[in-house]
Image 1 (cartoon, rainbow, N blue to C red):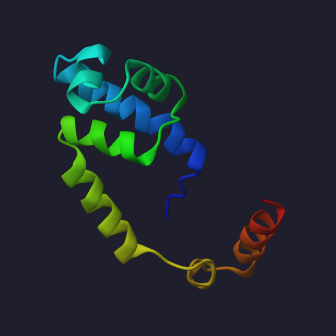
Image 2: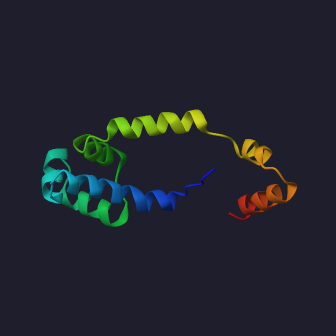
Length: 106
């Protein structure tokens, strides 16, 4: 099982959207106009990952990513497990203690 942190997403998501924008031959300015968001929003998102949900959805819509995002959310929801379920699936007691320690120290 792969654990993805919020920081991982903040790093990867803007890169993926930027890659999609470039692949479609759009400049930041063109994307901002098509999505009806300011150019500064697009720039800030690509640089920092910071964006409102509404603006993110607008960008995703223009870049034809809404279906993929919704499928990912639905798939993740179906496969989601509680921390207890993850701990129970571990084979050795040592690995359980390590995970518990990591969770408590977070």
